[in-house]
Image (cartoon, helix red, strand yellow):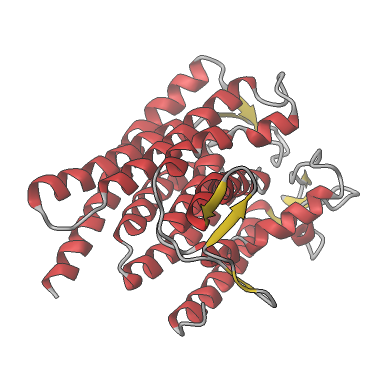
Length: 346
């Protein structure tokens, strides 16, 4: 009982540190970005206001502070037992993704980098996770069974599943999740809202399963995201940019990998798979913006290339209502996944 209480206090400290730092620095960043002309146009508003960009920088600061707080508690107070190798590898991957996201915001695929190059950027950030030895059990595939623990590869000899997992599946997971979170974006509060719900679900499951590193990573990013949402909710004062969306996806992937929650992570991102299908029909060249009307509603364009357009086609909704409907759908998915996990069906 005492151990659980200390864990909860530690998680609250990580959450509070991340929230406080993000909340403190965001007004400063918003002001500075506007003065320097680093702004984006809010295309979902009829007057097309200019909004400060690159708010993901403050999320990176808040997240890093929260992780440092957890390491301090582990090292000096001994309240929790953390695998520092795993935690620091996770921090490195997420921080590298955040840095690459900021670079992408400055010289991204619209300004010189090709779309396929943009999609492969997070592979480099997966290197810290690839370097550590993760002992997740072999995967179970329907109709096939468990993947063999070892493989014989000509000229190389016997190779363990763990090596294949680290060198192939880990970078695929980090890259896939990062780009998935980057696809469904463009409306006030949408990206951070979806990320917050998914990470909150993973946090509860991680605590229930005793996955401390996953709990620390998810609660810390959750604190930073909720602070960011205060300024990104309708009408947004700041946009997160690719630094935000890529970090959300990287955190989901990292938490899934370190916490042996791959199936949970994939199921929680169901909406993003729908987004991938819709955008894939247009070779990933369309975005999810709507067409604002004088009455305040968002009208979908003549094509349907996003989940946001699907919702817009259901009726006359404001931007806030469109986002709310998508977030409610994510809540329903999260409750379902948590229930299945709680029943031990994974």
